[in-house]
Length: 434
Image (cartoon, rainbow, N blue to C red; front, side):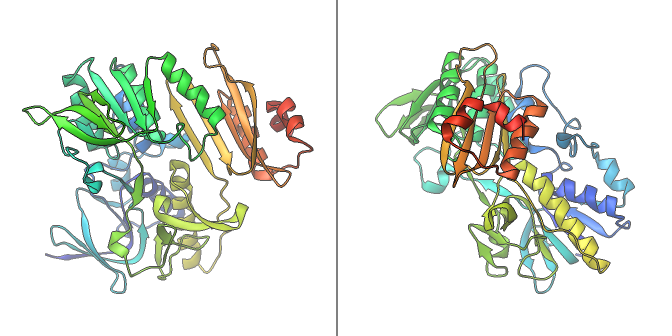
């Protein structure tokens, strides 16, 4: 098979790949210089839509509606855009071997791709219950959500099992968003997770209590402190029951599992320096191998605000790290430099009529402010995290664009506070006056 050569190759076809391509175009990439190699069959799209509007029973999002870069208010990059820019989209192509010293990638079909500069944007893969040998976890209608193919299979099952019973395994991002979307699709929904409250990596017990009660008021049943240890299926091989560690069994027509992800670094094991589960990079996302960059979920990078190495799994960082890497690549080629990546951690989610944003670091003492009554017609509340007398993190549910910008500013500037009581009393106005 003929070898293909490019100056730049982006490996992966997710959000980071699309935003990197847009930045290359801005920087003046020449036709034929850049290729995106993706195992997915479609051009890069805004992945968060899959757990939200893509699964809505009415007014659902569909491609080409949510190709990048609409998620950040930018231009929608259709497949034709890549053609116009001379960027080669190599889709439905899985790379099975990466030889970094030889600057070569090999596909499952035996195609060889050479590059001068590589951007690794392979993201994460979902953790599957079959990885742990959970009994019956290979039954039909047990779903994971990562790519558009996964969402399409789940959609088919939603239609086939209309008004059925859904069990959501996991109480994090995917668990909360999928529980909401399955309820909107008129399913009887039960969430199961082992932690004492939902979203424990970010939420305090007080914040979690609001969402758990809100979901319960919507008819979502929540079972905490136990895990799924097995599944039974019917004569068609379709899941019919979820067996829990505490001895209970839950009827299920559909099971959606959201128990986390792991960075896709396998291709590069032993070839690049790794740290904290990801590929270690500098503040420009260059790895220990010159001319090889890593962005998004799998990059462990210097978080300037906190002077430590971190890995951040979120779409906002995927977008911004991709843009930073391309700016650095182009500047380096011209003998120039760019500023170091200065990223304030940012997370958000939307479900039902709720919408929250978080900025900064969730360490230290916390104060809760505002109206956190789940029965309120328009609840608006938040929390500050205070460490060493400074606000280091801020969370807000139901905020306006201006209020969300205010809490972002607080997390970045880290203002001093006189006392926890004082900042609790001021609440949102503390952020708005900074």
